Image 1 (cartoon, rainbow, N blue to C red):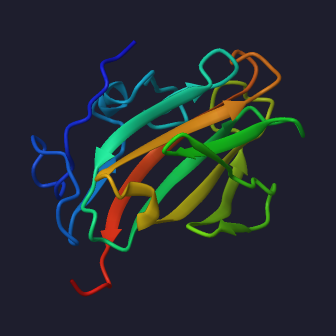
Image 2: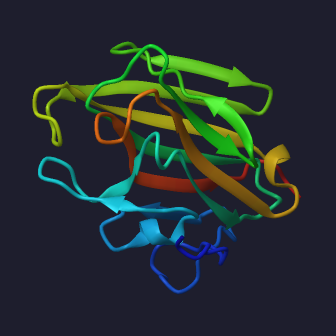
Length: 192
């Protein structure tokens, strides 16, 4: 198991410090430089057709997570990423984003744009592409862009733990998932 990196996140100019300390702060992971190993249970994959990404998530490795320190006076954290659905999915397969351990299912609608919300999390999933990217070349892969707005109620302690989890019926050898181009930023509208 890879060590958990709970250090903090500042603008991407500084790779040493990792914290969201100001409203102009953001972090980005393209997972091309080993960042996946900073995630709890993090693995990285690269195969022809895909860039290097966090995962593969699947039946054998269903969960990867990371804790971030964030400014508590911000209004929300915006998280954007690409979700890779590798080698298809069944109706009983599910994908979740975990926020402080609480599961939020991402509605993958197979071509249409999905939208969901609860009192403090709003999510949008825009289906981008469906084609054979890699791994099993006879089954379609899907790439979906996901954007989440996470209200300040989730990180009043100054830390925000995010995770990705899948519940899949088939072995990772047959189907899986991945996360790529992860970006997290603060939004500050309130006056203090």
